[in-house]
Image (tube, rainbow over all chains, first blue to last red; front, top):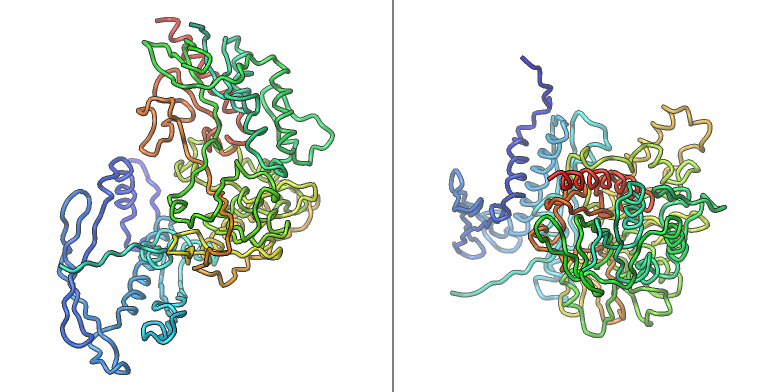
Length: 187
Length: 411
């Protein structure tokens, strides 16, 4: 019997599977082509409902374990019914979810055991943009700040490096920091 | 048709090192060169460029720098002279002004078609270098027509650049040096910063390359890399070789007035868009630098050098300005694409290349027996593209090639 030294850290991330997928998709670039989507339906006022169920990847149609329903609305201060977070808040949710998933994965890959990871995310937005008050003001966030509090078996530099690498490999961080072509049509 | 045993394509540092290695093994060969010996050093370097490595780090097979300034940095012209002298030192058989048009396989032999006729041989070594064809992103097509665009291999000096603001894209050695030179010449320069490797010129009184050489970092082998592709993609070091041994980094560029922005990400109408990831690019580079300097301190302590070298002089963290994500292009006259190089081998069979056009090889040994490549990033070791690093690769590949020729002879 041989003794294999295993990586003691367990953040619940299946790193071997991720590394296996990376290897497989290097050999078969087509398998790496994914398409994510959602359907959205207006409910009433500024309230609408998005449903996430199907996506495409690894060469075939895929389905989530269950259907996810996400409502967005605007708060009462905008004279809305506040049936859900605002869409910009959903973007912050996406960024947070993506970066934290990255923190867990990168830490696991580097053998760093996490005990707790907490993030606060804030986006500053000037409504003079979306309300058409000032054409020099953009509609979206002028800036976003993310602050992590991480308790882990690692030095401060190692934790900072994990957070930096998480940003480098984050889809939503890239979506927010770089321009993306968006085509909207009417059936 | 002329015949030889081995054809080497390119008479720069890689081709000449291989020629020397083959000559030592009494293997008959010819070196084909599209221009003159050290052609890119003579025709594709800007006037002020100096090597990033100190002169003492200029060791080729059976030849090295023996001048009176071992701590200095050679100019491009001096590198060209050095390589010319190397060629003459062993009368390397170079055919100048001979352009390769096709490398074809005929049975177990190769036919190299050139602008001066065909050459039959039994092995081919590709030594055309890593800096032949600039890699320019498709964003270039979206820039307004009034903007003059060029790559560093076409840049010479500030006089060549028209008045108006200049956008330099890429903050590795080329981009950082050109941005620095243009800003000092009085231009208003904006530098788009993506992935970069920050290094101080000296640390604790010693050249950073002295430390990297001493720690053995430059000798790391391709077989030791956990992720070789990533190691091969690493951007070149953000350094400058100058008599004053000054450090060139984002802080020094900011201090001279260069406007720093994130990675060049898009063009929308008359505006350039820059990535909001700038702060993380700087943080990543600082963290990586911190790890290197920590390893150097550890090495100094382990080797008992702490009393001999100066005290740790850690560079200041990169001061990240509130970088603009959109900049109007109306005032800009020039964009310089210091965005690296791409593989370009129209004269090779495409099945020798990967889906991005790069040569498929294992430590310089190509898939087709008798074909070799050297001088590419991390061919066999971290220093493979260095004037000081191609030598060991050439010697090892010459041994492999020698064995291959013996195998052919036995069949």
